Length: 472
Image (cartoon, rainbow, N blue to C red):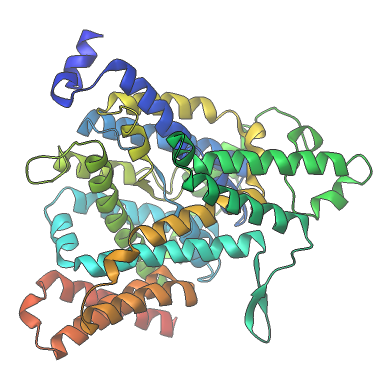
């Protein structure tokens, strides 16, 4: 034990063993929702739900260990919610790639991200983006996730006349998800005890899943399974297949699906790298990962008091390298891109100060990976949609105040970023519109000296991505 305390610098971080264990458990509970949500979202594009569930648990454990050991940080990393939505609903849903090709795109973006993390270029790229524009990307990402949640739950549906309209609130699943979302907001607002607010989402998800499961079980007493399934309610696993974990699902999702005997891996690679639109997707994933990771590193470090005299995160260079290494796990292991989670700050509020808490997180995620049948009730849109709505709204409002001050040359590009991400249903197009319009408007207003050179490069790359979208 003394060795661990020295290795993780307990004295320098003012850490205690009790705080590390408790903080690790709290961080685990705060991030746990990603397992059923990720597996449910990727099952919509044809992936094995159980396989994705286990591999998400495994990659979360591995990434947390990397960051814990390499950077001595209590920051937990897992598959990003926005990146899940981007893969499922844009790369596969809109661009026309299948899930195997989508995972190849994720892996290619991970390699690019890793290489940049080894160099000072990563920090230069982040510094080149004005803070207001970076904040607008976060706001737009939150709005995109929230919109996906509205659609997934059926609260908002498509309409030929008005494009969108309110969903059918006579459907039990829609009612359940709406009430679950409202519950998450109520819990978030509770001041005493403070722990309710910190665990608003996990508690709301648990309550929604239990309420829906009880309701469906009661309906099954008088109706068939097929009939009850149409209501959009979660159904207890003993009604659908039991509690045994099916390990065959793991084989189906790893290595881009090459082990299942049904995927032509050569053809998948050829389709990806012969399509210009795939390079635009790779670039978008890279940018989203970069901005999200930077924001989370700062937020979690500040929450735990793990900053230096200048306010920079401790071991920030090592954190960037560990984050880059973690990005290499995405794609080939059957998950989307790995990114730090802001929810890690919940663990720091309970005493997590070092990488030891991440080892606790890793162990708990490995155990959870085998519990998919128990978590299957969370994989219904009426349940996991609550997480999309809650997380999306929090991301949206957390940076909203930061884009409310500035001149037109800053506010208009920020607004274009936010609006286009949701209305065009594309994170990639939203970022492109923001960066390009910011560059043009600031050049026109005589602020060329304030624009850093890397921004011209980013604007050129985003312009190319828009041209590719139009042509292909």
